Length: 185
Image 1 (cartoon, helix red, strand yellow):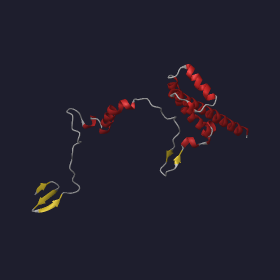
Image 2: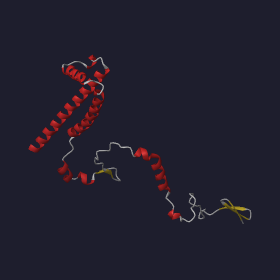
Image 3: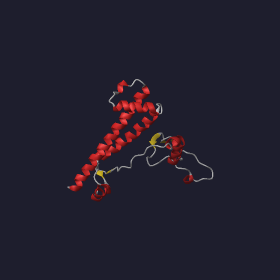
Image 4: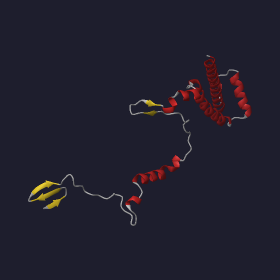
């Protein structure tokens, strides 16, 4: 009887090895003298350390996080499972979702960015030039009538910030009126 790879040859008859027999292989990661296999780092841990070494500086950059909104869990049937957040107690404590207030918060974020841009453009103009631009805008001068690029940019961002501020004020007032009507009813 002789054995070749995967087969047994006995009296010139080729017989495949039994499926019950298994080839035993090592871990593939080698060994460290003096350490047991259980003491070695797990391959997943080694991969995590390599990813952190490569992407650590990028992951450490600050970023705007989410607002911590409630994200429901989807159960095994594909249905939303809101858990405790779908109860009447949660609604009683936090009130129903207010679309107008949510839109006002989103516009508030846009207003913050518009004010940052306005501040950057404002540095290019003198205070006298800024006052003249605002006076011309209040007089009803169209944006296309501004010849200087800095004055045009300042006027554009000023109008955008003012429009956003007015929209936010109107949305908050509408939300407040709606809540007052619901409380009175």
